[in-house]
Image (cartoon, rainbow, N blue to C red; front, side, top):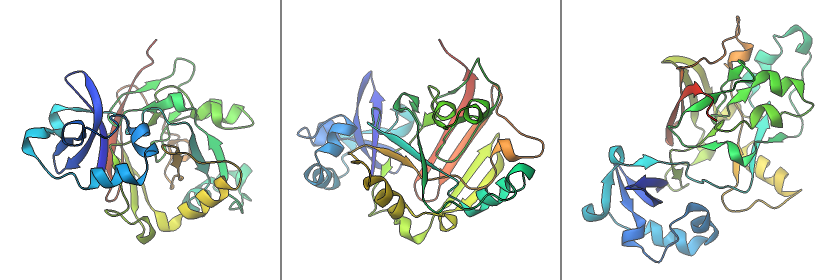
Length: 266
């Protein structure tokens, strides 16, 4: 089941994706919350109701006729893990100053401020304060000089618009992450990253176990699970994003997001 937040005719609500159409759950299941965080908080009863919603052409819109929003527009937390793919660690070791860098024994997490959340096809700002704009898989957009300048990575990872997510939530009955999934990223049609979840240092289950050993994870919280090799800052020469560049990030079986670099908005 694929659940999305969408806007049509100025009204934002949640829907269930059927191929190239989206079923308006506010029509067929009016008892459900119309906002994703409230829906997820309602738990399994709400999920079961949505799962039972069947295709009805009179309550469907073409995906091309709606605006897909960030599936969870107002998460309480947005966590991300660093150095979590073996091939990414290997490319970091190519930097002379980091030739002895070791695979982290425990997950290395940082925060992305939730105000960075952005829609799956919305523009991402090129900051006025930096030209070192980079991509990662979620798309975990990064401002590398701000990231490197601070003892933590939160500042360089949290600029407004730098957390595009989506295009929808895919439930585990459709895609089993335990079987392994391909992750790919393109910039202007050129393949930059081509990795697989089997290369993760710490599995998704381990990441959740580790985080919940310290604090409560709540419905709608986001966890970016790491990036494979191929980030722009580690290319030779470095390849940072420019105005007009288009970044497409795809996870096997889940779909893709695509974001164009635009001038920073006021």
